[in-house]
Length: 86
Image (cartoon, rainbow, N blue to C red; front, top):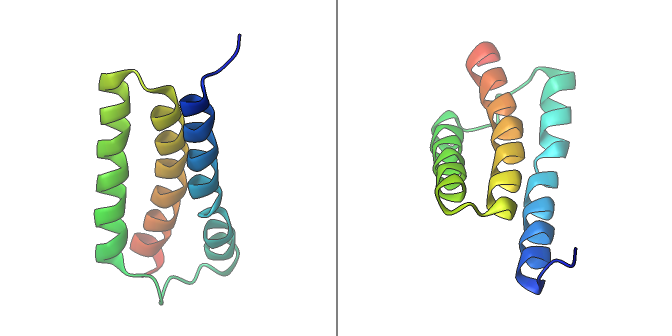
């Protein structure tokens, strides 16, 4: 099966924006420090990512679904630590 250029582009873009969260998740996990992370920003961000995920599901757009599914897990991990450790 050959993927369209748009699908490859979407998967690449989604992969990069998702991977961008990994260093912050790892740092937050190791240090348990969230003092410099904005709670409001991450609440808004997680809500927006969840809405993008729903959008992808409604449209059946796999690059959007995959990228936002993984990104929501990573961003929610940071949000969890922010709520837990302040």
